[in-house]
Amino acid sequence: MHEKNMKVKNGPLFEIGMKSLVRKDPLPEANQEVSEKVLLIEQLKDKTLRRTIDEMDERVTVDRFSLPEKERFHRRVSEMLNMILAGESRVLSRVDREKIIREVTDEITGYGPIDPFLHDPEITEVMVNGPRRVYVEKAGIVHKTDVVFRDDDHVLHTIEKIVGPLGRRLDDASPLVDARLPDGSRVNAIIPPLAVCGPTLTVRKFSRDPYTVEDLISFGTLNTEIAMFLKMCVQSRINIIISGGTSSGKTTTLNVLSSFIPENERIVTIEDAAELQLWQEHVVPLEARPPNIEGRGRVTIRDLVINTLRMRPDRIIVGEVRGGEALDMLQAMNTGHDGSITTGHANSPRDMLFRLETMVLMAGVELPVRAIREQIATALNLVVYQNRMRDGARKVTKVSEIVGMEGDTITLQDIFVFEQTGIDEKGRIKGRHRPTGIVPRFIEKIESAGLYLPAEIFRSPVKA
Image 1 (cartoon, rainbow, N blue to C red):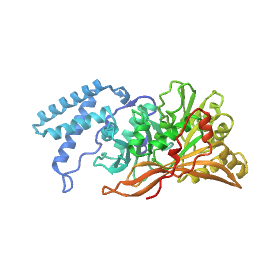
Image 2: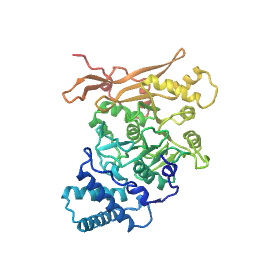
Image 3: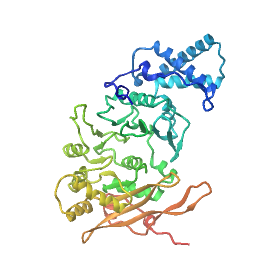
Image 4: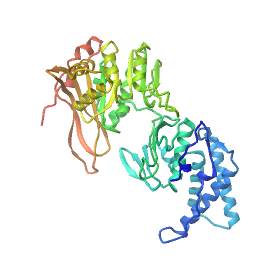
């Protein structure tokens, strides 16, 4: 790909230009694979887009468009198409006409071919693997769509419309970027030569209405007993880490658990990209910052964790620990900032502890392994492990207490587990959450906070 096509304009506004929006090369002649009807629609769409752009201001940002303005553009695009059809004496079906109008409007006022997906509340993730392969996640299942971009430049144009207003750059010097849409959705983009199949875009959508614990219960993520237990753990200031694989729902569960924090406490949240939606009034959200164009000005999660300790927090919520900030987080939990919650990538509760050891070592502090494990064992009380099942459902599969040390090993005991019993005729996982019969050792801390957990929720069910 030519270098001039790879550069993204830098600044808050994105200039909509003819070269990036309309087809650069003439349409190919009709052949066996491309029908005349498809070619006709593409020709009409390009003409409508070109003539509509000619009447627009040269500098336009997607954020500017309100709903009335989008409706105005929709009407103008419809009028322009009617003029083109009348001038060329062409007849088009109502379905094809609406398709052209919608796609041209989305191209101008939204994010092109993927714009409808970003407004569909049932779609949770959009994945563009080059111009010809677009996937979406819906109800936990990834589906390939029939949506395509014209070429690599069309995908690049869509990425530019996302990162341009945010002041982010994407070019040969900086071929990947993490960003956030105005609604909070997370965006990752990577371009050739790093992305072999063409410009690649991933959008993890942001829920406008945050999920509640009742939602998680209805989804089968956890049951009423686990919800009650976790709520009282948060209220009694138990230190919790939520672990799991990619896209297992850790952030959603973190958001729900954070909602149990009393309103009169000062909460500081630290994230790479701000996603948490807390209802409490006294919340201070902090967000890490990448380096600028000159490679300076970076502020890491660790920098924010260290600074947070000077902000008199009652609770520290770290969106995800990935590196040396784990040491500062553990030290904060061990020095009076109990009741903190964070998440981490791992394949099991035990694996989460191993990964924490590695993260502490990444802080550059030379500590014996036993000392690190003692820090973990005394700082953390509970590991909530969440898994994305084969059917796409997210489930809390283990709730494990960190008991302490036996020799050089951190000991764990499961309080609740998910027990799979089979698969139904639709391929969905069947099973139940059940207690193991073990009462956590920190039950006294819950009771000293004036909270009461009925003994029945820990009672292991009698096997049939």
